[in-house]
Length: 234
Figure 1 (tube, helix red, strand yellow):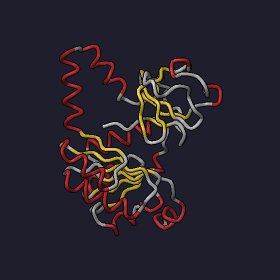
Figure 2: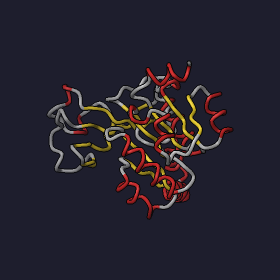
Figure 3: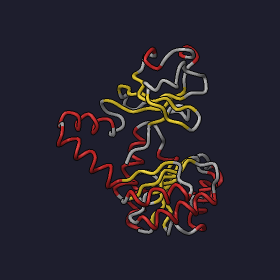
Figure 4: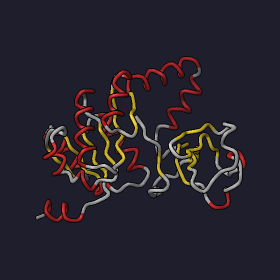
């Protein structure tokens, strides 16, 4: 009865496929920004992993995320966003293909170990691809060159403490201004399908349809609306 009732009411939820270190860290980040645990469905082939996920307050589905019938049990067709984080890159490709076939509108964020596989994930339907090995390597390199800079970057990727990277819409009072004239520290402007650096001369004045990527002071427990969201993490 509980499962039937959940399936009849859930929509616009988040599905996490693969609940290892990457999947768990990703959903902890989003929940730290305000997503309710009852809006998260975890899919994993390990019953022990699903037991741990349900103990944490998430809904769990045991099964192979590359199979459409398993994803349908997780109501992927109704999901707002999908996190693809299995252990293997080839599995990530198949999961992404299957999820995109079932849901054309959801935002899909996928993780891969090797950078050479990132284009294949994009072709499979992922909106964003995080290369875990390369990202970790770059953070290590930055920390070697400047331990202080490494600490700042580590702070930025820990949602809910210190400083956070956020994406938000331009507000009416900011229309016509330049990025540096806003109250927030703007690092990029999203215009259409382009992500422009704050000092890109083609930006000119901010438009109502623009979105801003900003660095803000973290507010623990703050709710994140669909218009204001944390950036994807590893």
